[in-house]
Length: 142
Image (tube, rainbow, N blue to C red; front, side, top):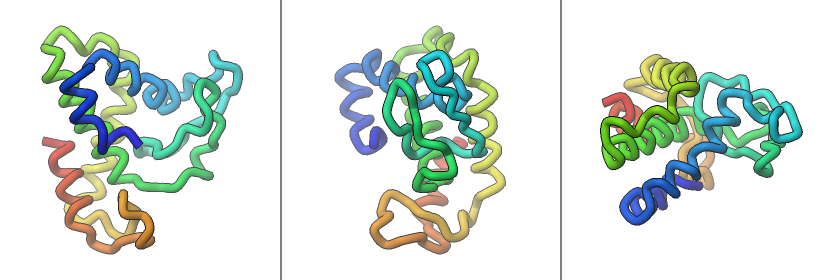
């Protein structure tokens, strides 16, 4: 759960925060084989859970699914990091652009009504027509 703490990390240690995002990005583009286990991530939204890094041993279908929540979170965090670190700070994203576009496309197709899905308040179960999810997705695409 990185998103709730991201403002602090972004302010206090942006480079450390960037390094926190790398395992998520590696897992998202199926780069886990280099770390000893080839676990494929095959969903069109950002992952919610990695399993145990560096192996990232949790198959995508066994994760708790929060499609709009996590895709919005990742796009918002990456955009904020790029703003904080400046215009020449996005080189590390070169191999991840395709997955970032995939997440943005997913959000575009899911909005303005994300339907019935989990959000951070997952103790309630799936939430239909969640305006907070819709707002997060719109902000992420902005």
